[in-house]
Image (cartoon, rainbow, N blue to C red; front, top):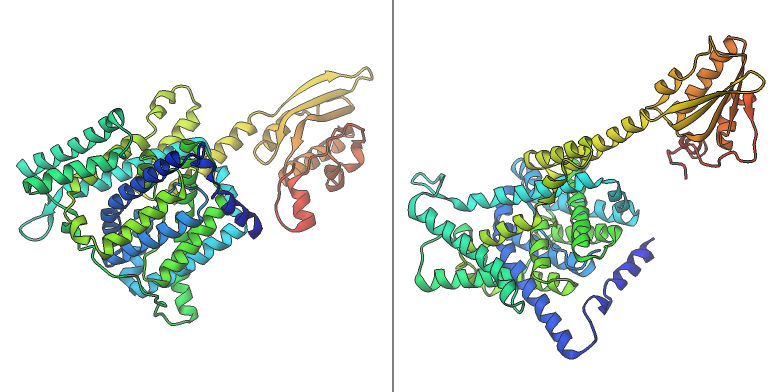
Length: 536
């Protein structure tokens, strides 16, 4: 299993994505695009990391170190080249309670354990279960996250009031801020029509920053959030007692953080894969996220996961390989070490404009057009996931969406079961069952039959049906008892061999046939192996 992950990692470093015809000019051009995309992402990462550190209740450098370490390790080892990871708000809102009650050292220990859990998920190849997320849930996730990104930018329109409490901008400061945001968005929109040499988001940030610095325009800047100057992160074993009490504290948080991080990362993996036309390795991404968080926790970082906003900036800027992600992390480290004074002069309005364009590009606008053409259940699931993502968090939204979709699927299948009947030359009656027989359709199955009024010979044909679970077997057993109580002969046709073995009372009534199906019943695997499994 680990060898498959290593093979996927090695294959992801193939030059096929960017080598083109192999000419030096094309190779240099591609590397330049990747580096510029990485620079753009790094500039957008700074205020995000600082803001999420404040949300979690830790020092800004804890968020910046997480953005650097998680971004670098996942860029090197992750399952989707071009995807960006770092400190995220989805994790920060969970961390704040832990930090407030037990301190930052417990957070570092939790992040290490979170990473170990994610590594285990990857090695066990559990990431493949992300395929169970239906498309309406995916669209709801994208829309909800776009709204969350938009709402997060609104805090940049607040300034400290006389009493230190933040208040909304008014008057000329608000007009100036909105004008710079609009200018940034206009440059990003127009730049691709002029040239593709410089990524549009980078051009927007550069032009607006030059105007603000050159004319001395008084607007909020990155340095107003916090200083980003610092040194290299130091190796630091979390200072917590190695006791069961400590585990009782950190395990629940670690499990929740691991789940949220993997869900957001794997959904972002699929989204970036859809945009770039290439699919990434889910299990490889789980291992990469786990390694990144384990290392981050040991170097004083708050942990992280994939960032859909920064991933979209990278993709829109032309980033397609690991070079962009690696360079983004290294640029961020350079900002921390040597360029903090320059980065702190960048106006927040430029970064807000970039993120607003990300919101526009991320939101699935076509979802409004297809609402009338898709089943009502899918439309409701899409809206539900969007709302829950905004009001709660991503993990809860996805779980709710999957459960509702599964229940809707079960209900639809439960109503599909029916039977065609005809008489035999001998005066018997044949029920040809159509539709799956499982826990949701057993009541409908029972209502198909009339033991009191049926003739003496009744044949139930399962050729066009499928017995799925233990509830289905019990329904057949109960029906057989009813016909036996009436003194009538019941015969069962075209049941699989495992049904023959599992059905007791009805077993003697089965008719063997060469065209009996061979699918498996879930309860059969449970009886034999002690664990639930599906047929094939």
